[in-house]
Length: 320
Image (cartoon, rainbow, N blue to C red):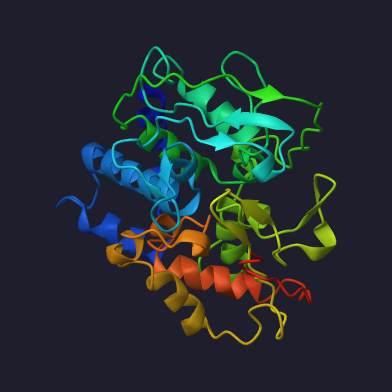
């Protein structure tokens, strides 16, 4: 974490892009008006935790999920240990396993440098040079700001080491890897929160909402129907299709108010919602994490989604 701490001295202020973080920053000021390094590191890690859990979904994929609980609730103590299986359910020709991202030095990333981790997150390149299967949304993280990526790395460094050994992937067919839009984190700019639409687009990209809420055909996203839902998840015990979140007034969220959209998330902040097995009415959406997203960020997502192309696509949430 040494490289990250050194970086703090030259660019920390840029991290605090939301009103809540400005408040946090001000509350940690010393009498001289400057934030000391200890508080700076704490805020860096807190920002990273927020992103890794509630926005980018790192912990959602790299932990174990219990689908005997609503929304595949994360098994306590499994955070970061990896092993989650991604196969034909996710339109993958073969099987891919989420890696162990804890600081374990044998089976995790304890021997990885900051640069190694950043390359995996933003370029899809592992320490050994392998290219990650793009179920890992590195094409999205590739466009995130340097400050946010460094925050995620700082938080991952604090996870409890776990020696879980994850199997190697197996692919039955060659794949086409996506072209990355950004060549350098230095050029990535997080929009100012005063522009809710642009900032909302940044949050939507960071959360990779498109990947689950866009239908696929022959293994490729139908980009003319982006965000229109219909991506099918068949986990055997239940089948669920993702929702149309375009502003179409008949089949999407065109008639939703900002308050309705916000309440959809806030309604899942009650832990009791995840205490039972809903059977065939389960969901792949990690509500237990995304529901904890900051209200401001949820509103920004809504603002951006109001601007995307409306797509008339009636989705049956539970087809069977």
